[in-house]
Amino acid sequence: MPNDGTTKVTTTDRTSAPGDGQWPLWEVFVQPPGGGPHEHAGSVHAVDAEAALQNARDVYARRGEAVSIWVVPSVEITASTPDDMGPFFDPGNDKPYRHPQFYKVPRGIRM
Amino acid sequence: MTPNKAEPIAEDPARNAAFEARIAAGESIEPKDWMPERYRKQLVRMMSQHAHSEVVGMLPEGNWITRAPSLRRKMSLLAKVQDEAGHGLYIYCGTETLGVDRHELIQQLLNGTAKYSSIFNYPTLTWADIGAIGWLVDGAAIVNQTMLAKASYGPYARAMVRICKEENFHKRQGFEIMATLAAGTSEQHRMAQDALDRWWWPSLMMFGPHDSQSSNSDELMRWGVKRKSNDELRQRFINLTVGQAKAIGLTIPDSQLSYDEQTQNWNIGPIDWDEFWRVVRGNGPCNRERLAARRKAHEDGEWVRVAAASYAAKQAQGDSTSEAA
Image (cartoon, rainbow over all chains, first blue to last red; front, side, top):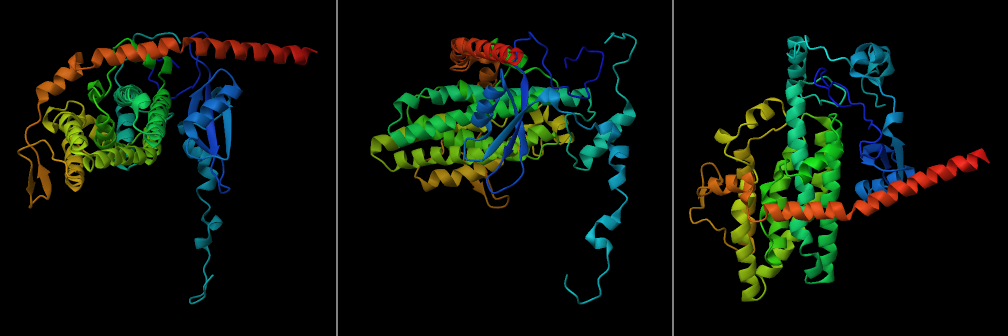
């Protein structure tokens, strides 16, 4: 989003206006060998999904880091915002009984 | 958005204080977080210069790909140069998260308004220069980037982690070239020494002006973008490198080089800052040549961009035709 000088840029809408000479942006997720989950690696610009996959391979998987790659148009990603960080994550913040340390085990017993 | 001219540019002191507190607590600043405009600007400046440096850095080495002395050396150099392109892309991608347009950044590089590391404005005269670049230039870059891997801005730090992992190979392949030449014929040894003589001082200049002369350092350190000063990083690089040169029988070109038992540092003679500023201001040995080569590469690639766009358009058209049928 171009900064028009009147607003502070606090968010990044990762879009590119059509006709600005720039190809769409794709977010790249790479799965390492060994069964880990796909993880965000970065982004690439590309004309279409097929080209985005090829670019992602060349940029983020030059050393056998990947067994699988996802590319997703950046504009399609919906994300939580820092502003609602408190209330949004609140339901998970006050429940210590969801952690094993909440429970007492008699001395001398190994769990 | 309607511009509201009455709106003051000054930033909310409470938000500023909260931001500074997050930095002090060592939290990572992410793209959607509020940040002072000055922090954003400094990052855009620093990250885009860094990205441009990776891209321009391909040129002095690319010069030697067709003349590498063996297939092994050629494969390594090709892979290294390809890595530099990748590193440029990692950092451009990080810079874009600050709301800037990559296209614009590249235009700034091509039209000469953007800066990049001055080290790439020196020529690569012999094959030994490829060894010296890997060993010294990448070696210095690793010292700097290892520090930046802890930068307060998340996307920059993450790009640095990725780059540091890959750059160790660059340094080792360079050092291997130097060690091989240094242990070769007397002519090869001379070639290695000559490359060290020419690259040593410019490598030390890569860390930037002395702390007392560095206009951006204080602010960048206060915001946790940089964790160590230019002089600290330079000293670390010197201490690492002096022993490596000795080990392969090469001499650091500094008659005043001496070891200080007390501080355990190698002290160097004075750096020629006039040379540094001359090259930064565009009058190094290769400034014009580098930009001309970069522009030519960009223009020569135009047909690829046109073809890719036209292919994508045709594919999209084909998809909609088949959907209609």
